[in-house]
Image (cartoon, rainbow, N blue to C red; front, side, top):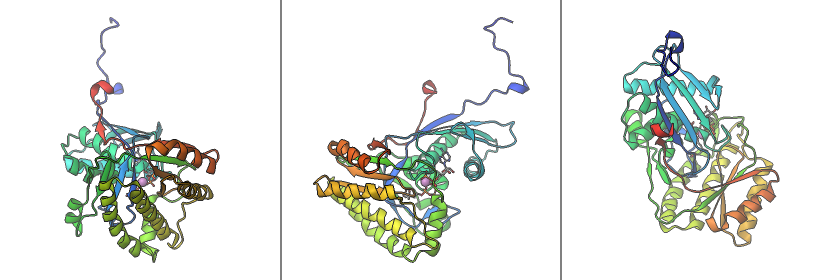
Length: 348
Ligand code: ADP
Ligand code: DP6
Ligand code: CO
């Protein structure tokens, strides 16, 4: 046989469908989502508002494999196990149900963001999986429908479908009405392009997942309701501050909203505490920056890492101060980044 002849694939070397590859970035909420009113449909109690980042993308490829007995899921080059695998399989089941398809899939996903560290890997992960999965199974979804779908994987993923700033609506009512009404959409902000200095005080996986922590908070924290109520005023203040491009107001509201969310967890029974001594050291350094006249404001998610919002012109100084406060910690400066997108064939 000539070397340029292509041998037909036998049963042992099945040719995989080329599938679809999507890239999505994590987002950091300025007004946090914390708590679900429907766990099955993944409906949040509160509206949330975030900035999608230009760092730490997730790249996910979904290929259909009709002859396989089950889905195969690889995360960062290793087979996904336990809960991580189960979440992807359950999500694929939903995509198949919507598409009226049954074929198993081969999923390969790679995070540049540390997984499960409070840096929103579930947001970039499920936004990329929603886009690649929908394309692989032939679903033609508009951005709203794609955001709704991503929400079923992780509520924060609904926002990573969009670039820049995005709001995720909690939606009205229950059941189908809630499902239809809970999705993210872009918040157009003309002249606001801040830096987000990320202090990676600990990139390891959290002991308690966001999902388990917020469930415990909703069920046991006496502070949860009042935080959820105050979050409504925070959101309208945030929208106005973004419209004005007012970094001080955006930062003040984001910081108090995040600290309030952590207060709800600290009051849960048993308490959920993600903030470490290094987190507090970075928070102290942010106060010192403000005392020195540098506008800088902190937000933290379900993990010890701190994100500091500041003007781009101050980012190098903020990064230096934060690094001094938590020696040895890596610091990455992000800006607003793009929405989820499919890779074209030429890029594969
Ligand atoms: P994080 O702060 O990183 O978002 P979460 O507790 O919300 O932490 O979610 C972490 C979980 O999200 C992982 O354990 C895994 O189940 C899922 N996840 C993370 N990255 C991906 C990915 N690329 N594809 C599919 N699922 C992912
Ligand atoms: C503190 O979206 O990760 O980062 O919906 O259960 O997957 P699930 O949780 P997830 O929770 C994010 C919580 C947060 C705040 C936020 O991103 O709004
Ligand atoms: Co998450």
